[in-house]
Amino acid sequence: MLLAGLLLIEQIGGNKSAGKGRCHCLITKVLLDRHRRSETTWQSWIEQLEVLSSYPYIGKEGQA
Image (cartoon, rainbow, N blue to C red; front, side, top):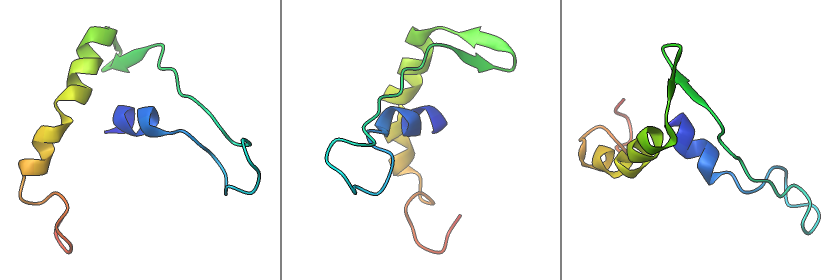
């Protein structure tokens, strides 16, 4: 989920000025349990996130 969030960041700040705050996150290395994961591996994790929407507790108010 953290990787997906980083990939969604396009802007930082409060939209006070045109063009200011634009950013792009480039993930250069992913470590899980101190082991490096290939880009192919973590990209496949991102592609599978939609499966979480079928879980009953995701997106339902008052449930965690």
